[in-house]
Length: 298
Length: 331
Image (cartoon, rainbow over the protein chains, first blue to last red):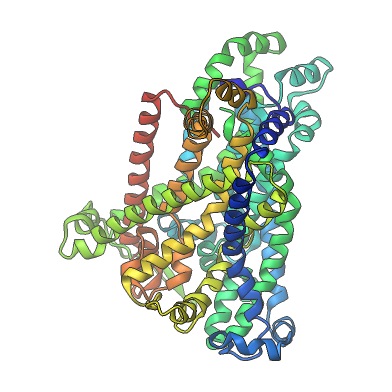
C-alpha cells in the first residue's frame, strides 16, 4: 500500500467515485441482482432486532410462541412495567457512567500513546507494540481471578472506577493501534510547523494533531463505548451491588428473576439497544474513513 | 503488525531522524514519548501483566474456591493451597478423560474459529463489493447492514434465543415449509450450528466496514489501466482488488481470529451452562473457574494460559508466513 501512505483521508474519495461511476454504467440486470442481494442481507440483518421489538409489544409471557396473536393486542405495558418497577434506571446510569468513562479515559490515553508511537522512535518501541498486540489475546479466564484480587486490594471492587480501568485495559491497546495508523496519515510537516512556532510536543499534539484526527478519534471512541457497554464477564464478576449492575448484568439477573416473563426481557433488551444504537449512528459517518486510515496505512 | 510498522517506517526512519535532530536533543524527545505512554504502561502493567504473572503462578498450584484466602463474615481464612508444579497441565493435556475435557473442546474451538472467520470474511467481502458500487440507496443499505454491530451482543443474542427456541419463529417457519425442525438449543450438532450462525451474523459488519474502507482506498486508475488492457471483471477482482486489499485483509483476519477464538459472549449467553459439548475453550475455562462448585481457579487459569500460548504461537507463524510472502500487516 505504499501508494496510499501519504494520502490524507480526504483525497481517498475522488478515485473511488470515478471508478464507481464507471462501474455504475454496468448492465441494469447487474444492478438488479445487487439490489436483490443487498435487500436480502438487510432483511437478515434487521430481522432478529425487529423481531425482538415486535415481541416486546406482546403482553403475555408466552406470546413469543404465538406471534400472530400479538397484532390484535399490541401494548406498551411491558415498557411501562420495566421503567417503573425495576432497577432499569440504576442499571442505565451505571452502564452510561462506565461506558462514557471508558470512552473518555480510553480515547485520551490511547491518543497520547498512538501519537507517541507514531511520531517518536524511542528505545523499547518494538517491544511495546508487541505487548499491545498480545494484550488483545488475553482470555478472560486467566485474568479474572488475579484481577479480582488486585481490585479488592485497591478497594475498587464494586466501584465504577475499577470497572472503567479494567475496560480500558482491553480497549486501549486496540484504540492506540488504530490511532497510530491514523496519526501516521497526518503529515509530519504539521508537527514541525507547530514546533517552529514554539509549541511544546504536548502542545503540538493537543492543539494541532488532535483536531485533525477527529475521524480516527470517533472510531476509537465508538470502539471503547461498545466494548464497555456490551461486556458481560467482568461486569458479572466485579459488580456486586444490584444498584450498580450494568445493563448487561441487569438483563441477566432479570432473566432469572422473571424467568418465564420473556415479554419483559424483550422490552428491556429493546430499551438497552436504543442509547447504544443512537450513539452508533452518531459516529458511524466517520467509521469508514477512520477504519480505512487505521487499516491501510502501515 | 509490529513488523509492518517497522518496515513501513523503516523507509521513513531515514528522513525522520535528521528532522528530529533539528529540534531538540533526542533524550528530551524520549522523555516526552515515555511521558505519553506512561498511563498505558501503568494501566496495562497493574491490570494485565501483574494478573498474568499471578495467574501463571496459580496454574502451578491446586487453588480452588475452598482453599484460597477468603473472608466469611468477620472471619478471615488464610489460603491453604500448595504448589504442585506442572501437574495441572499434565492433567489437562494427558490425564484420564483429557479427551472429553480438553481435546474435544480444542478441536471444536479450531473448527469454530476457522468456520466463523471464513464466513465473516467471505460474506463481508461480498457485501463490501456490492456496497462499493454506485447504487441508489447504498447509504441506506450500509446503515441497516451495520445494525448487528450497533446493537450490543448481549441484546441480540437474546433476540436469537427467542427465535431459536422450541416453537420459536425459525422452527415455525421450517415446519410451515415441511422441513425438519431441529432442537437448536438442545442437540449438540445444532447447538454448534446455531452458535456459528449467530456469531456470523454478529461479526460480518465489522469485516464489511473494514473491507469497504479498504476498497475505497484502492486507486481508481488501477482499474482503468486494467480495463484498457482488456482485463475481465474476474481478472480485475483477482489482480487489482485482492492485492489492494491485502494489508487490510491480513489485519482484519488476524483480529477476527483472535476475537473469535476468545469469543465469550455469544456462546455463554446462548447456552449458559447447559451445553457442555458446544463450549469453546474460553467459555469452558470460565465454567471451570466460575460456573461450578467448588470453583477450580487453578485449572481455569491453566486453560487460559494454554489458550494464550496457542494464540501467540499462531500469531508468530502468521507473521512469519506474511513476511515470506512479502505482505505487510497493517493497523
